[in-house]
Length: 127
Image 1: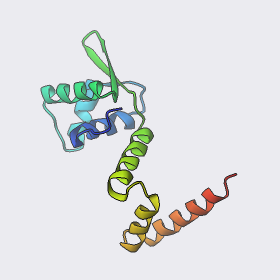
Image 2: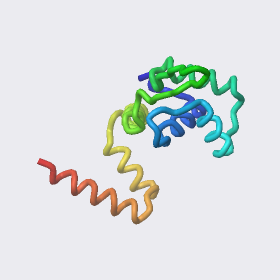
Image 3: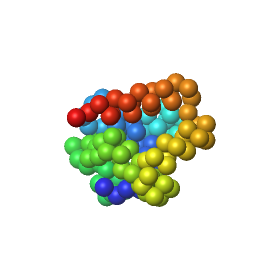
């Protein structure tokens, strides 16, 4: 998976990941971008989609005049890869450094802090 994608490419991937259908049609992406307040020219979208195909994020299939796109990378896989990249780049791979910064930098709400604490406790209980 080509790790880095542009913000515009990520916006497209979010639409594809959020589509309950197995395949996503070109027209669906056009409509969804417009609905998100990010209308895109047809040719621009063609270029962005072909980049995502080249980077291994999407596979494309032409059925008659319709283009169908299928994700080759799940949202969870992408998030995990991005998180690891961020940890390596900013915190030299230290998850503790990230969590410490979230807490000490007062970047968590009380609810988020309690949820994180519960997740850490739950994680410890695993065999």
